[in-house]
Length: 151
Image 1: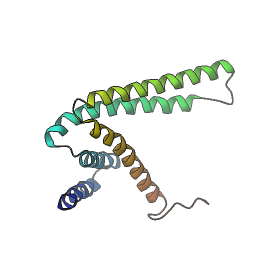
Image 2: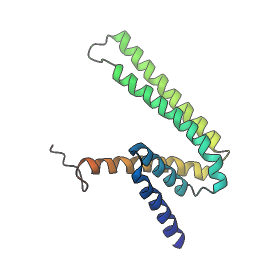
Image 3: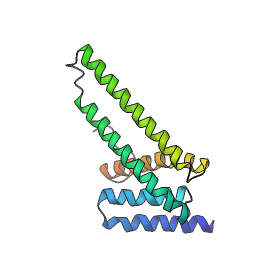
Image 4: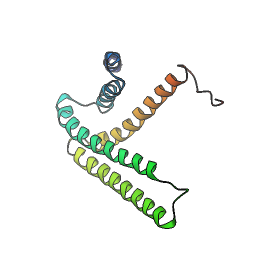
């Protein structure tokens, strides 16, 4: 119990220290604290983990940008069968590249983390993303409760 209180205090301290930073820096600092705590990273493991993770996360971010650009470039209403098929092919090629990157990242991180920690990482990333989206939604809709869907 004492360990949970100490970790929570450290995590909250890291979050409160982020208020002076820009929003993306705040999120990044919170993500680092969140993942470090969830994976129970030792200083030695963290030293090996973060460079590998950050490299892959940068590559993942670039692929997400490509996906966004691909989606924006599609004019489904004005497309003919040939251009539509090309967009579909491009989309699945990009998805294959994303999957290959995730598989490579998982394999390389398995050299640093246990299989249980890799699984925890996958879950923690999804949980952190949900938490950030929830906080952003709360901020947009006045701080509390569910957003008013009638707007």
